[in-house]
Image (tube, rainbow, N blue to C red; front, side, top):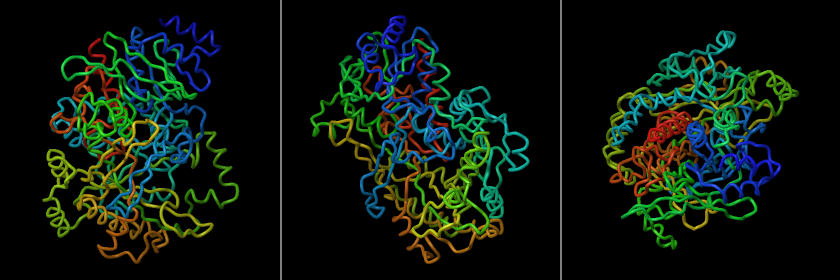
Length: 619
């Protein structure tokens, strides 16, 4: 088979490469799909999808197909330059998702941009590389998932990462600290500190300590509480690291691994495999010209692996007949597996913004728009792996509840938490509630190095915005289809602020954010009048209204194909197999039943690594 694939590629004039763009090589792609079947069909070439594909294709006898709806990110500065994070918004590599109007958030429709590109969100995110605390990973196991705990997640994250210890001149200039023994050293993903740290981020360390927050010298060893220097997913030469660059590019010569870009999977084909059980014989793939071809899984032992992400994975399951019958039947979809958990338990970090103006002559990235020659100067420096464009968020403050709330407020918190919100299950509520008062971080403070919130911006001045991110919201939403077309985005309803706790706590933690700007460290560089929301917001009622009007999403969504017992609305078991199926797995962040007090990128890589180990164990 593999020799014939190479011949097909050669005859069509396409270089013999693992990566085939169906926009330019449709004939080749169609020929491969019509002629061959695969041991593993991976739907989604994102963070976890390419991770599992590389690991499975290490066995030359196993044929692996990856189907990615987007294009390659190779050579695209939107992807490769760290400081271009979020510049992809609205471009051809953005899925352009948005929520339904949020009843408890002033009717807002929240943008939920996501990477439509090889590498998925690893190609477009903020590059932050952090771990959560031990308790949070162990909580996943305590929900009925033996083997999914801190020990296994930590091992998988170490397997993925390769630490680049900072050069001495960066340590001397910026103070970067890291404990090499807490991180991996031989994985595919380069993790590094940037070659530049803005002054305001250096001052953020000082401001946090002045407020009584601990400086954490080792946040990667199971305790991330405090303010610390955060690594980012970039090489030592300041090129963003994505799963395409780290996992796929080095193995493009593997003839048993085929990756199609611009390949839209429209549905899984399911056939009966005994009483109340179904197998997938493959998936339908739509080409850029609109034609559809079937990709076949091997009859003996073939697997279909969904790695399409928290939004698209439940959409594909439902379109294929796996989901809540009460949602599928009205759409005329034949129900194969009645699995009510599909698309439920949707959660994301929620955030708000404070904005302040820097004193002159201090600068943020706003200066690119008004300081003559600065942008061009920094572009030249970047070619040397230096300067502002290498920067990714590298100072984070993860704070527990008792660091933010006073004694009286903690009493109020306990009273509010006596009532379970209606959309969260009892086991999940009990798990999160237990951690809230245990010292586990509940809020993250970080700086955005530009004007990111507000309506009035003075010309030729630089601003900084502080993001306040609620790490463990109790509100739960859903993602469900309302048509039978893969091209119609599903209804995405995060149910923001449905929980009284979420609204109250985010208001309190946002108000607390002002205290950083009142410290000597920040008073040195910031004007004292707040730009957004402004000094007129002072009362609890005003803060809560501000939260409703401006709350946003952290782009760290999880949970819509949860790793939970079926009786708890789970979708996959501890082997990541979809309940009621024999050969459908889910390998992405949708399986996480709980959010972590961490940005989710390392967890996505870890899930890919752990999934590969599960599948390789039966070879």
